[in-house]
Length: 331
View (cartoon, helix red, strand yellow):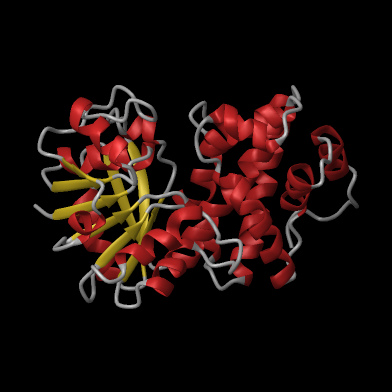
């Protein structure tokens, strides 16, 4: 049994709290607002983001960051990507030396082009940081449906410890030592999922979706390798696995937002209608900047940026992708 603080009470933070609480651990769930804490204390669920998933009675709730962070065996960071640095800064003077922090957040910080674990390490110098990622929608994890995920850490003993904490009969955890690859796959799949949603919104078919997924993982892999990641990571759960589910699932907020954009909505309008954080929008510009920095061709990412920030119609962007110069499939 471990003492765990979950920092962030959105749908994923709530689902992970459900998982860890039912796995016999002592869990404190931190919310940014007192209003959310009161909601959990009254209903034992996130009635807005994950209704119907009742958290164990033993779970404690707080909006005091010190209460959630202090004297914990493990901290789980599950805030949105745009809040990761400010949240880590709030934690840095509270955590103990060598504190294990597993980051669930997926994305690339636009200003620095850092992945999320690098942002956390930049703020909390003394932490032992890991990344947990894979094809695991909160709506299904919170119902106990069979799922698999990967945890990556620089120290494989840290990854093995987290693997033991999180594993249940319905939640299988693998380990990896390729944090960079796991995080690049996690962040950029959201950008490709926007494109897949746009294709659905335009009324295109399964052929289009399959092409976007396949060529999307090719782009992500090219960038990952240029950044020092391992090619095989992108064939795994945090790569093609997460990309497939995010491009296809009815639970995917990135796909939903893309679908609305394919129907003609601007990205801000689509985000309002989805009523949740759409990480692909935050990651798209950073992904484009990374492609330029490392000299990697990423035509799908480039077209998504044009649609988001230059008012390029989604239909014409797809046709531009189709009419690019002919080439060999693999390098």
